[in-house]
Amino acid sequence: MKTNYEIDIYQQPNIIRRMIQENSDQIMSLSHELRSWAPRFALIAARGTSDNAAIYAKYLLGAFIRLPVGLAIPSLYTIYRQPPAMKEGVIIGISQSGQTPDVLAVLAEARKQGAPTISITNDANSPIARAADHSISLNVGEEKSVPASKTYTAQLATIAMLTAYWSNEERLIGELDTLGALTEQVLGQNHVIEKIARCFGSKNYLVVVGRGFNQCTTFEIALKIKELSYMVAEAYSAADFRHGPVAMLEPGFPVVAIAPKGQAFSDMAAMISEMKPLNPDLAILSNDESLLSQTNMPVRLPADLPEWLSPIVATIPGQLLALYLCQIKGYDPDKPRGLKKVTLTY
Image (cartoon, rainbow, N blue to C red; front, side, top):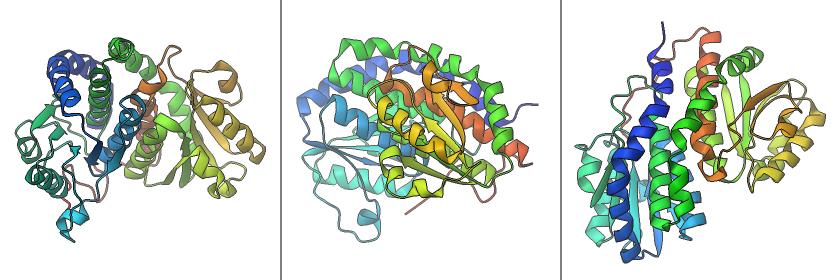
């Protein structure tokens, strides 16, 4: 029988299709307002998995809107009570439950200062949704598993939609329609990923390496593996990995490398070449056949996957890897120890 976590994972293609269809008009209207507001920066408040979605927003809004984007420090609002000036920016709160008190505190202070606010949540009636000037609901339905899967990719898809419509670039808007099919394709790699999990399953440590838009993917995959298999899973940019952590590698050390084709590909290909003489157990997520031929653990991403959308698709093999590692180690993915579905931080 499938676990709730597995059911949530396999719902993602249809959820993303429906969400794009249902939320397009709202996000298009909001984007018109954003262009008229012309904010000088964006500040994003989030926690946990949503913080990884915020990293994706940091890259997309920086690349396509040319907007400086920062991640809020919630303790400045809740513990130190010394919030920064925010009036000239747009403030975005991301929370799956919409209940996180410190994210709510950032939005409340922003409105107090007169800054426009946006929330992205899965509960249109939550405190965070009600606190924002504009609330975008993910509409993914109840996520029954404790670890986030479909709510995370829905957050990324929402951020991609907001970026595409705000930029008003027809290419980006058109590529959104491919997301449902792209996520469906990658789910077909489940048997390959299960074999990788069997190879990695005897270890208690792992490294995930990526670059550029997929910085968020490295963090999210590592988080899911920590939550479900209790392995020490560390996430690194390829650039940061070279600055010391690469020294950890030794024969048999498990590594997941995320290397879709695009502008960051050449650096990831170089990073993989630098790692190979150290003989790690290397799983590569890519849509470049030459690179995939360099490992006995290839995970094929869709050939026509746009780089800017690749984090939405590349995250899914990581969700499956976390599931299979959890099961191989004899744990229940629906009952990870010490975790609750809604975590309240102040």
